[in-house]
Structure formats: structure tokens, C-alpha cells
Image (cartoon, rainbow, N blue to C red; front, side):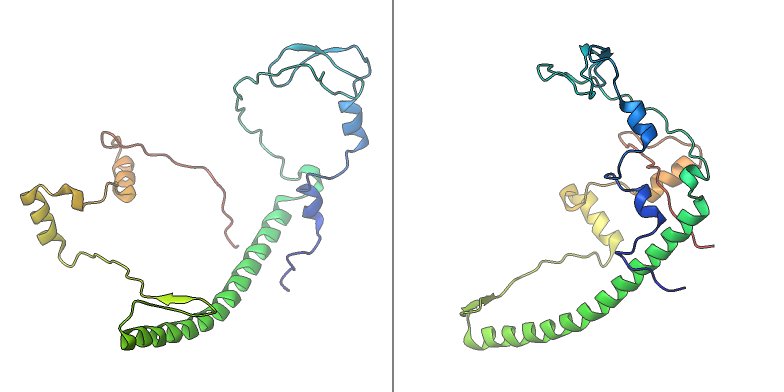
Length: 207
């Protein structure tokens, strides 16, 4: 199967196009026939006199009510003539395309980064040889940049020292998501002071 082009047009473009023209049925539903018809403001609920084109009076100062989130209605498998099979198949194709282009880009960038690393070592040698921290040129300035790194070689020794010296500032303030999830799987509640949230999304697995 050939990889689809990012800019290609298919049946899904109309489905997600927010600028698609209104259908006759949609125009009929949106039409306000009585120029003096009283209708509530969809934002605040105040009764207003609407014009024939459905516009809200300019002088109305709307104070929107909190949005009430309604549970999403089940989407028919073939809504709008488009089948779930088609959407999933197209999704997998586009995901493969992204992976293919990402790999090609990363391979190209890797070779460029290798060249930059050689140049960085050369510049460090020049700075060290001249005993300076920076050098200014017409094209730009190169300078020494120190990066700090602290890793734990022996966790038991380190943690014993933290407890003995009451040096808790050496620890990061975060909770293990894996441990919390395991506790919930065992029927327990989250530890005190810990919130656990599951965010609903969708993924596509290749058949």
C-alpha cells in the first residue's frame, strides 16, 4: 500500500472541514422566519428579539452561564456515510506516514548533529588552548557552557544519609504513578494527599 501524501484529499477532508458550506437542510434549520421572534440567548438564556438572519441584538450584553457538559451520544458506525473501518484504516496509514517521515528526518538530523559535535570539541580545544571562556567572531560567539549532573550510585547509602541528616531537600517532591496504580488495582484508595486521575482518549491498534 503506497503511503498517502500529507496534503492529499480524501473523503475525510470534508468530514473535518469547519469551513464546509451549509447544506440546504442546515440552512432551513438555522433560518428565523419571524423578524420579531422571541428566542433565548444560547449563552445566558435571556429572551431576545432576533432578526431574520438569526443575529443577536448588538446592545445585548451577554453574561454566559457555566457550560453544562452533556455526555457524548454514541456515534453510529456509519454516520455520514463514512464507516469506522474507513476511518481506522486511514488513521493507521497517516500514523505510518508520520513514523516514516519522522525516521527520515531523525536520520538526517543525526548526521548533522555528529558534525556539530566534532565542531564543539574543536571549539573547546581552541578556548582551552587560549585560556579563555569565550571567543567573539563576526558570525557569533562561542563560550564554555557548564551543565550540572547529579545521579545516585547507591540509593540505600544516599537514603540512609537523608534520614540521618534530616536532609529531605535532596529529594524530589513527586509520587510514583506506578505504585499508586498498583494500590488502586488491589482495591485500596490513593495515599493521603494524592489525586489519581484517568484521562479518557482513543488509540488505534493495527489489525
